[in-house]
Image (cartoon, rainbow, N blue to C red; front, side):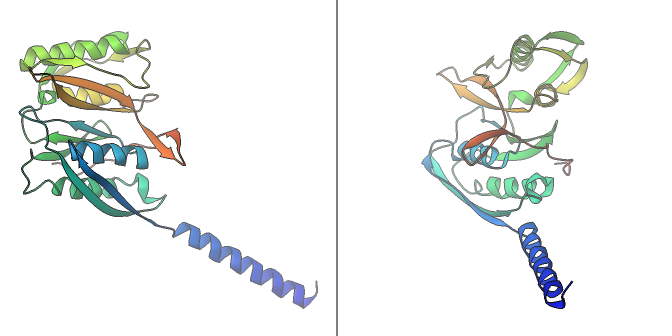
Length: 238
C-alpha cells in the first residue's frame, strides 16, 4: 500500500475516534420552566418525567393545594447520566428547594419501589401502614382495594381516578404485606416489569377527597412517546 494512502487512512481513523469521543462527551443543558401555573411543582415534576423518563410520583398536601407560581431550573444531562440515580436525586432536590421560603406547602423527596416520590412533609394518606393477605386479582381490582383500605385506615377518602395506559384487566399478584406504607405497596405493584408506572395524588371537590391517578411512564423523544428506561437505583435514606 502506498505511504500516502496509509497516512490518509490513519488520519481518517484518528478523525473518527475524535468524533466518537465527542459524541460520548456530549452534554445538553436543559432549562425547565413553568410559568404562573397552579401547583407549579406538580407541573415541573411532569415535565421532568416526560422529558427524561424518570419515574416520579406527586402527592398533594391534604390541607390545601400549592398556590399558583413559576419555577425555572437548569441542569446538564447526557445519555449516560440520564439514568444515574445521583443526578436524578440532585435535580429533584434542587427542584424542591425552590419551594423554600414561599407561601406554599413543604415537600420532601423519598425513594421507594424504584420510583422517586415528591410528597408533603406530613399528612399524605399514602403514609398509612397496610396489612393485607396475598391475593391474585385484576390490576383494577387491586388498585381499588388499596384505595378502599387506605380510606378505611387513614379515615381520609381516596378514590381511583384515571389510569392512563394501564391494562386494568390484566391479572396481577399482590404479595402479603404487614404494616407496610401504602406508598411502598403501590410502588411495587405499579413498577414491577412489565409495568412501568407512577401516579399523582390530588384533592378534589369541597370535601377535599383524594384522587389517585396512576399512569404509564413515557419519555417523549422527538415528539414520539417511548417506554421509559431503567428505574433509579438505591438512594440515600431520607
